[in-house]
Length: 353
Ligand code: SF4
View 1 (cartoon, rainbow, N blue to C red):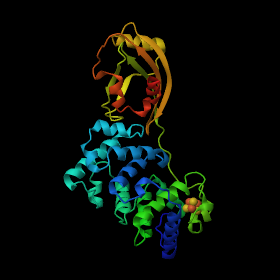
View 2: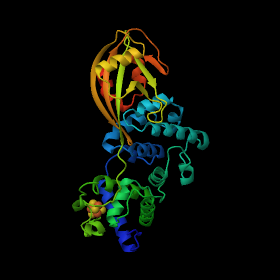
View 3: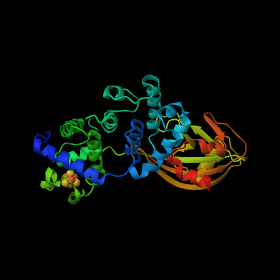
View 4: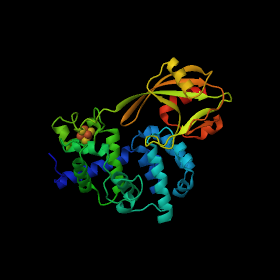
C-alpha cells in the first residue's frame, strides 16, 4: 500500500493539529531563535547521525569558533576538524568547509535559496536542501529523513520498506500535500519534532500524539511493527593493535590518515590483528626500536557505519627517534591541537591522565 494522502479534510486536520502541537511542545534549540540559514545548515549536518541533546555542546562551540560562513571558509581545515572531534563522520566537516568556500566565492556569503543551487554544494543532498529551504526560507520543500519516513509509514499504515528510494519519493509527495500556505518551516520542524519526541522508533507514545485520531497504523494496531526497514548488511569486524609509541622526551609517533575512512585525522601507530605483549614487542623490534618497554593499555571497540574495530592497546616507551614513513613525532602541545578520531578516545584519555 503506497498512496498519497488524498482526503483533503484529513490532510488539513493533520497539518492544523501538528502545528498547534508544535507551538506548545517545541524544544528551545539555539538555531530556532532566528531563521539564520547558516545556523540551520550547521545544525542539520550535525543532527544527521547524532541526538540533539548530544550535539548541543558541539553546535554552540562550533558557532562560537566559526560564527559566520566567511569565518568557516577562512579557517584552516585542521581547526574545523578539531571542532568536529567526537562527532564522527569527518567528511561532513570537510564538506561543510568546502561548501562554505563556494558560498563565499560564488554567492558573496549568502546561502542559496534554491534547491538546484543548494544540492550543487558539497555535502548538501535532498534532505539538507529541503531543511534549509523550508526552515530558513519558509519554502514548501520537503525534508525527508528517517523520522519523517517513520511518521508517515505509521500515519498511512504503509508497508513499503523505508530503505527503498520509492518510500522517500512517496513520503516527499505526502509532505508536499500537507504543507500549510504559510509556516512551511514550522511544519517541517513539527514533523521532525513529532518523530523525535512522540512517534519514536520503539514504543511510540500514541497516547500523547496529536495525530492519534488520524493515524491508520494506530487504528489497525500496527504502530509497533511499522516502519518496515530491511536489515543492513552486518558491519565487517577487524582486529587492530594500537601501539602508542613514546620516545624519551615524551613525543608520540603519529600519522595523518590518508585513507577514505577518517581521512585527514591523526592516529597512533596501528598494526593489523590482535598482538600479544610479546608479539607487540617483536613488532616494535621489526620497526627498528630496541630496548622498548611495553605496558598494556587495554581493549577498546569502535563502531563505524560499515566496520567495527576491536582494538588492543600498548604504551611502548622507546629510545631514539626512528622515523617511519608517513609518521612524525608529536609533542603534547601539538597533539592537543590535532584532530584525533573518537575511535582512540580510550587511549587518549590514558595519555592525559
Ligand atoms: Fe505515531 Fe502513534 Fe502518533 Fe500514529 S498515533 S503518528 S503511531 S505516535
